[in-house]
Structure formats: C-alpha cells, structure tokens
Amino acid sequence: MNPPGRADVASVSDDLRAFLASATGRDELLRIPPGTALFGTEVGLDSLTGTLLLREIQRRFGVDVAGEDLNLDSLATLGTLAAFVAQRARPEGHP
Amino acid sequence: MTREGPVKCVVWDIDNTLLTGTYLESGDQPPGADPALTAVLAELGERGILHALASKNPPEAAEHTARVTGWRFAAAECGWGSKSGALARIAAALGIAVDALAFVDDDPYERAEVGLALPGVLVLSPEDAAEAAGWPEFSPPVITPEARRRGEMYAERRRRQAAERSFGGTREEFLASAGTQVGIAAATAADVPRLEELAVRTRQFNSAAGLPGPAMSQDWFRGLLSAPDRDVVTVRLRDAFGDDGVVGGCVIARDAGTWTVPLLMMSCRAMGRGVIDALLAWLIRHAARAGARRLLIPCVANSRNVPLRLALAAAGFRAPGPAGPAPAPYQRDLGPPLPALPRRVSAPGEPGGDAA
Image (cartoon, rainbow over all chains, first blue to last red):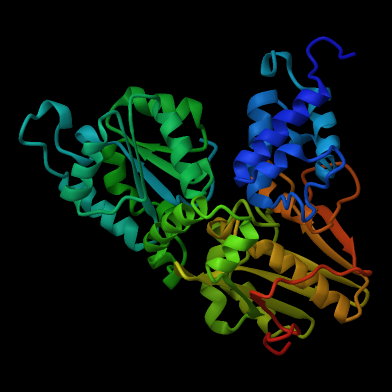
C-alpha cells in the first residue's frame, strides 16, 4: 500500500538497477538483489557513478538524497536507497 | 550576483560575438574573427582558463570559428535549444561546476535567459569580456605547469573517455588496462604553488570548500612543510593517455590517538579514476600503522561537494549529528580490517612506495 503520490519500492528498485547497468555498461547489475551493498565490490559505486546516480534520482523522482542524508547511509544497499527514494518521491516526479 | 571563486571556462556565443557577423547570413564568405576577443581567448587560455562555444547554428559554425580564431575549444554546443541548457551540458562534459562558467553573448535576451536559469554563471556582454582579463575572476593567483597544460589534458581526457566507453569491462579493469599510476608522496617546496591552486580552484572535492577560516595561501602551505607534527601530501596521476601531474593533496595533523585531515582536495579532472579512493585508503592505512585509533576529516557538507561526501561514505567515514553550516566531523575508526590499496598506487609505507 502506498500513500497517494508515493512511489512503489519495487519499481524504484528496477529503475535504479537499470540506471546502474547503463551508467557502468554492466548488464549483470540488472539482476542484483535488494540486499546488495552499493559501495561494495559487486556494484563498486564511486564518487563519479554515485554523483550520476544521485543526479538521476533528483531528476526522475525529485528527491535530493545528498541534501536530506548527510552521511548517505541511504546508499548502504539497493534496497535502502529504493526505500528512501520511494518514501519521498514527488507525485509529479513519478506519475 | 551569487557567484564566487575563479572562472574555469568561458562559454562564447559565435554570431556577432567571436565572429564579426552572422554565420548563416553571410553566404559564401563567412565572417572573420573579432580581433579584440581573439586576443582575450589567448590571454585567458595562457592562464589555464578553458574556452567553449554555445551557438544557435549548425556545427559547421563552430568549426569555422575554431579555424578563424585559431583556438581549440574544449567543448562546443551547437543547436536551437536554450543557452542555459547548452551551458549545463558543457559543464557536465568538462566535469566542472556550472558556477565555474562565464558566458559571453551579444544578445541581451540570451544573457537574461542564462542569468535567470543559472544565477551562478558570470554573464558578460562582448564589451565586458574585452576588459574582463583584468578582473579577479579571471586572474588565478598562480599559474602552474598543470594550468598551462589544461587544454591538452582535456583533449587527453576525451580520448580516455572514448576508450573507456568502448572497453566493456569494469572501471577497475579499464584503469589497469590504461596503465593508471597514482603516486602519493610528501610535498616539497616546489609543490606549494600547485597546492594553493588546488585549494583555490577545487569545489567538488574540497573538504574545506567555502570555509572562511585561515586562508590556504602559499605561506600557509610553506609553514606546514616545516611543522613537526604536520604532513603535506601530494597525489600525482598518469596513464597511457597522458600525465595529469599533481591532481590532489591533503594536510595531516598527527596527534596521539586521533589524526585529523584539515584539508583534503582533488581536481575534478581526476574523478572516476580511483584517485580519491586511493588517497582515503592510504590515509586510513598510514594512520593505523602509526598507531592512531581514529581518523577525522572535517568536511563542509553542501550540494557542491557531494562527490567528496560519496567518497567519504564509500571509505567508511560517518559524521555524527545533523548537517549544519559548520564542517561535519566525518570520522572513521582505524580497527581492522583495513582497506586494500590497489597495486597501481605507490605511497609512503606501502610496498614499492616512497619512504615515509
């Protein structure tokens, strides 16, 4: 159940997977489970891919992750990031 | 005007700005270059400032402008979209902040559009631009070898990015295949001008960005070089595509138990090449080897230095407490396991590295 205007965690997760795969050119990232660590060796998020990812989230969902999360703890795993974004997504950002 | 800090790239309009007429209305005889502004291109280029084009014209207009001015532009956006959109794409392509751009256009409408959409951009008429070489925004305090080579380095960067796009493997594999070498070493007096330049110019990777505190002048760095409990460190970067020279550095304050890094900085040109991650991993290993239990990196947290905050988070640093205007006390315990250092990195105290 999502409140009106909020996004669905599963669909946000799919969007994030698709973006990570296209930004890195690695199709295997389309299939990572929610518990996958983003900074770990598997995804290997660094300051460049991380900045691109946060920019895309802002563009698509209207959520300023870095502005709301000083420590970027929301980037721990794919699942924590998707939940953080889904909870704050603006309706116009994700019809 | 909200902008601050030096201009890194000037984005020029073509028609009736760099050219003495309108490209598409001149038939077989396209207009020549404006001599005063051509001189400004050269003067600013010599100071390490980049030039780019944004024009409502076909791409041939950019080629013609490059020919008649004799200038190699770092980027060109030709099309019929908004100029503010063109500026944002140029900043992204060059890896610099939009606020580090200046924009020159003879059309007051275009100047107003950019000024409204991008309030951090320094917007100038061609008449302003002819005099701007004397302004502080266009006068870097020092001009280093890195600054003079900046135009070439952007060309190397484009070749490197094209190679990476067609490479296919992971970034780690690409860095290895490109022969990437990161050299961390103690700074010497000869590095001081470049360290000051990095302290002044870097935004996205600068832990002290925007701090009013002590001016990070050449004198400040020189004083640190002879301080018994302080270390100043440089980071060099090169690969098969080119030598970027000194791309980063940091200052270390060694106190018993806790080591503090009052300044950590890296050129955004080195982004995506494993440099900041290598520097953070080495700092952790180096401090732990010396017996410190905690490494503290106070870092101003704003929307500009998100890349540095990402690198800090990836290296295990956290800042307790809510965000505020003061530097956030990012810190990390130095217990095992310690991060690995890739073999391409040479550093004091590491196998194959310089002596500490």
